[in-house]
Each structure stands twice: as C-alpha cells, then as structure tokens.
Amino acid sequence: DAKTTQPNSMESNEEEPVHLPCNHSTISGTDYIHWYRQLPSQGPEYVIHGLTSNVNNRMASLAIAEDRKSSTLILHRATLRDAAVYYCILRALSSNTGKLIFGQGTTLQVKP
Amino acid sequence: GAGVSQTPSNKVTEKGKYVELRCDPISGHTALYWYRQSLGQGPEFLIYFQGTGAADDSGLPNDRFFAVRPEGSVSTLKIQRTERGDSAVYLCASSRTGTGMNTEAFFGQGTRLTVV
Image 1 (spheres, one colour):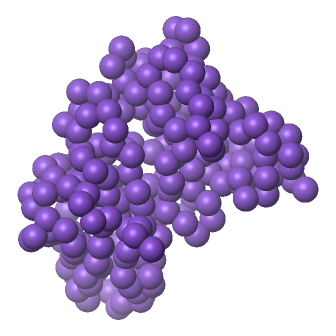
Image 2 (image 1 turned 45 degrees about the horizontal axis):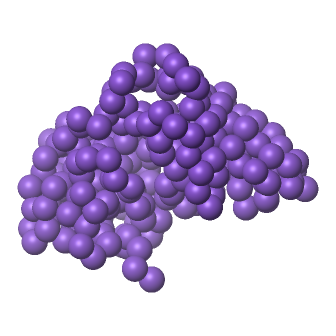
Image 3 (image 1 turned 135 degrees about the vertical axis):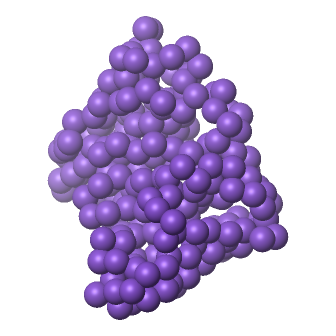
C-alpha cells in the first residue's frame, strides 16, 4: 500500500473549521483514501472515504486534489469532542483484504 | 448496543503466562481483524479472518501469537509465554466484507494487556 504523510499535530479553536492535510504522492489509480479517527481511550472510528470526487457526510468533508496526490479532511465546525488522532489511510480497491495500514496520524487539539 | 465487543477490557498477567483475548464482532460481519497498538503509535495489523479462515496472518509477530474464529463469529487471540514487550492495547474490528469498496471497519474498545 502507498504511504501517506500527515503533520504530527494541529490545533484548532472550538467552533472554527479545521483542515487536516494528507500527502500521498505515490497513490495509484485504484487506491481509495480513507480517514479514521481515534478518540482518547477508544478504538478508531470511520470518518469518510473517497476515490476522486469530493465527498461529504454528516461527520466531515473530504477534498481530494485533482492529481490525487493529496487530500484534506474538513471538519466544518470543530467541537471539543473532535479532539482525536486522525489517520489518513490508502487502501487499494483490488486488495483482497480490508486491512488498514495506520501511520502516526495527526493529533488534533481543540481549544475552547 | 450492537457494536464490536471485546473482553476483558483490561488484563494483567505475569511474564511467561498464557492469555486469551475475546472479540464479539457485529452480527453478520464476515470480516474480522485484530490489531495491536502500543503507546503513542497507530494500530498495527495482526491478522484478518474472512469467515472461519485466517486469510492474512502476515502481521502476527511470531509463533507465540495465534488466533481462531471457529464458527465465523467470535474470535479469540491467544498469546503463549507472554513477554513484557507484548504489553499493548489489542483492538478487534469487523466489517461487512473484507473486499471491495465498502469495507468500513468497526472497532471495539480494545483490551489493554499488561505483562508484568
């Protein structure tokens, strides 16, 4: 699986938007971009995934660069409950296993 | 709730002992995964089951680690002759299927294993 690069940490103020970047310059044409997050003392939880087009769901939006070498997870209005480690993961559609290869992720701190 | 359930939530064992960690996946999910997470690190893949069979066990660190899923539902991760380096949070996840596009994984809360 191709590698992703994320900043180690980011800070945000409550009720402001947050843009979490992810670089994946070696992405292949059939790699899906998945985002998971892990709240303190919890298992990871799915946030969103996409292939080429931008995606929106109730939790977040995913903006994918036209060349697909980078993507950005957007939390439209951060709350204190969004403080977590956010993982950007690539997974090949052709993969015969749904296993996820986690990196270090980005630790998001939300300030009141 | 109907989420992934892991028991026990905490386990303290002595070096050299045998431990079993249990995972109850979401009903109907054919894919089940075990991960291990050390402090400050992302989860590390251990093994993947599709139904009853281990389809990918490439992440198991050595032969002291073994996992089973005899009826395609509950899974047990077994660790023999535990070492202090085995101390970590062991996470279980399940998904509707292991292949294809829609493989959203649902994780349990994990079992914190401490080997003293």
